[in-house]
Length: 288
Image 1 (spheres, rainbow, N blue to C red):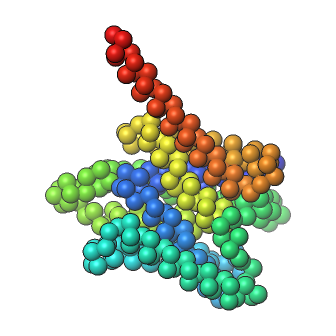
Image 2: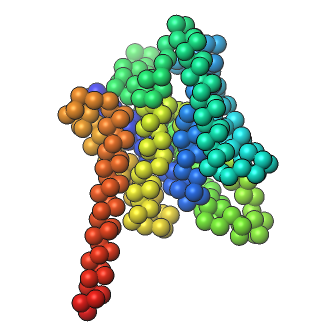
């Protein structure tokens, strides 16, 4: 049963991150997720030092605050300082992540958190954090949290589908129509920040970034239609969690790391398939 909970947690994180990552891919902002996942570290450490508990709501709020801060800093550097977007992302996340690493090293004796926890998470321990209603065992708490987050992500996408679609494909056109592109941007970034923060403790930074980028990038190889792309993203995300878990069991390795590797293997498989398919079409065109 513990294996099921671990795979389910990985799948929920993969789907939540992947659906949001599809918009990041279309907006050419894939590495924003990487920036946020690293930039939340100082917020996590500060909140832990204040609350002295990894399960405290302050931990979530502190991390979310720094996630949003990183988003604002990236936008300010890109628009006000006229720095290229990729450079502004790199400056922001390395600076904030470095502050977090320093805080961890300074207070590692007082905090039950370290760099390995930040990078790899502790998805193997998800089944141990059980939620009880009276004496009734409702299953792992992280599963409920990720399930609720996935519900919010799907609801947000469903309600704001047109707005996210137009502002992702053609921001200039949407501005001409009077659509507030900045509003949609910050709503999306807020959702990304919240999802990253909620997933961070369970799966770590590496897998969060992998699930934000790789499944939707793999899906984009097969389709540039948003709805179809999202369906493929869900499929590849769940497959990454499932295959990655069994790879980790086989290798006796990090589960989060193996899930990230599995997502990369699926990407390479689809890429090779696309290349072979194009060569076949060219060959048939020549022979006909």
